[in-house]
Length: 258
Image (cartoon, rainbow, N blue to C red; front, side):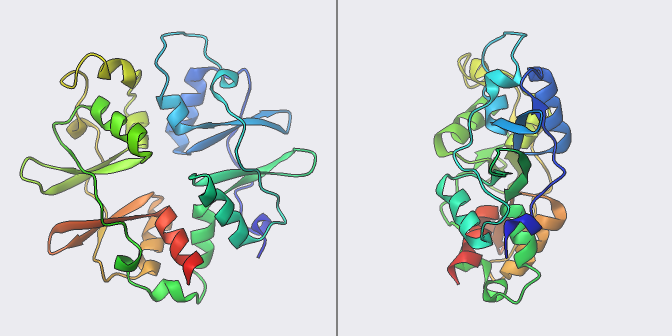
C-alpha cells in the first residue's frame, strides 16, 4: 500500500503572511496539530501546535513566516505505508507533509491515516490486548495545578497531554495541548514565571469524562475509539485504577511490531 491512497488531500493551510491570530484560530477551530505554510502550492514550512502555544512575546505582528520551521521529514505519494510510518516515528511526530518532486504540496499523512486503514485489515495486532503495548509509567496532574505547570511538563517530557486526578487520586479527566488552545490560553511561559499559583487551573479547561479501556481490551477497540472520536490517546483502567495510557503512536507501533 502507498500513502497516496490514504493521506489527507483536502487540508487547511496558510500563506507566509498570515497573522498569528489567524493561524491560532485555524488550529483552534480544526483541531489540527500541524499546519502547512504555502506559497502558491509550494511548501515553505510547517507550524506545529506547540509552536503556537509557545509564543511568549507580546508582539502583535507575528506571522506564519515567524512561526514556521522546515519539516524534518517530507514524504512522497508513492512511498510505502509502513516505511512512511517509521519515518514519522523517527522524528517523534504524528504527521508529516507530502510533496511531489517539485515541492508542490499534496497533503498530510500521519498515524491517523495509518490506524484508520489498519483497523479494517486482518492484521494480527488488532486482536492483541492493549496491555502489551501501553506505557505503564504515568505522569498525572491534579485539578488544582496551574496550567503553566502542565505546560512545563509538556515541554519537559514532550507529551501532548496528561491524565488529571482529583485530590484523592481518582481519575477525573485529561488535559491536552488542544484544551489549552481551545480555551484561549496564551503566553503560558510568562504565567509560569509569575509563580505556580498564578493563572488558570487545570480543572477549568480539562476534557471530561476521560475515555478509558481495560488492559485486556483489544487494539482494534482502541483504534476505533481513536479514529471515531478523533482523539489522541485513551486511558487504561483496571478496577478503577489508572494503569496505563495508549496513544496513536503506541497503536502504530503495535501494527509495525507484529
